[in-house]
Length: 84
Image (cartoon, rainbow, N blue to C red; front, side, top):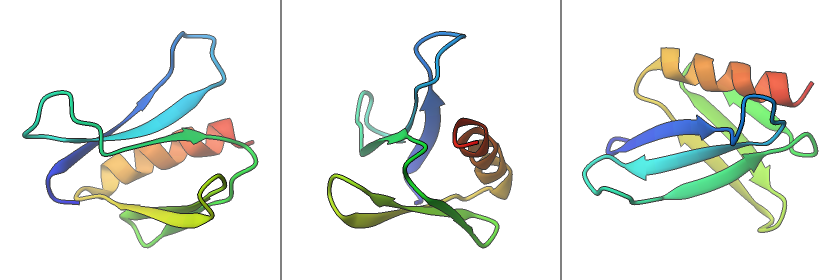
């Protein structure tokens, strides 16, 4: 996704709730996607630069493709830690 940045957020150091948030890098305060990382969702790592999952509430699949596989690795590690 060429014009986006992706971050994970956690409200406190001891929290168990994370969310994936994708922002448009040219528009301050824009939020393109917010999806909570949950244990009841199956996440799939596709290729070196893509993560896919099914939005339970919306009954649709969501996929994020990263420009840098290193960022994908970091996000995937967080997903794995939360979903253990």
